Length: 149
Image 1 (cartoon, rainbow, N blue to C red):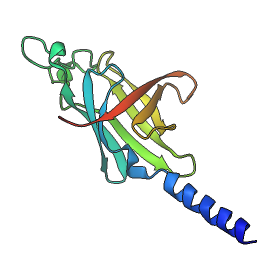
Image 2 (image 1 turned 90 degrees about the vertical axis):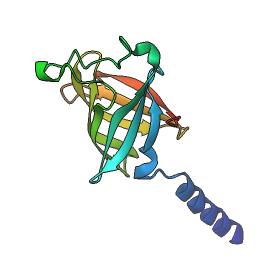
Image 3 (image 1 turned 135 degrees about the vertical axis):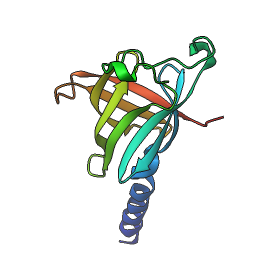
């Protein structure tokens, strides 16, 4: 009986230790191409992300690239550095993923519904952008945790 109780308590502890927290998504992330760093923060119970760094090789005439593919002509002259590309993600503890978000792709000027999750490594964030509410109709990307420096 003692062994069963010990195993049960160990299982409970292990489950608690390995459980994700909503704030696990916060931090600085390299995009999948390692050309931009995105900072994810919590704002009013939702998670948002903005580009905080871009490798100098992507600069044009010494300046970060512009949001020139934006569907709104008035926004095409803004820098992609400082641009919010991730919005409205909310953590679902039942599904252990961040859902209901939107992700903007400055390369195409398109915005997609998205959700995010971790698999085995909390330093690898998977995000999937999709269209028309169909999750399997989309593209996944993998971001890697880093620092601003």
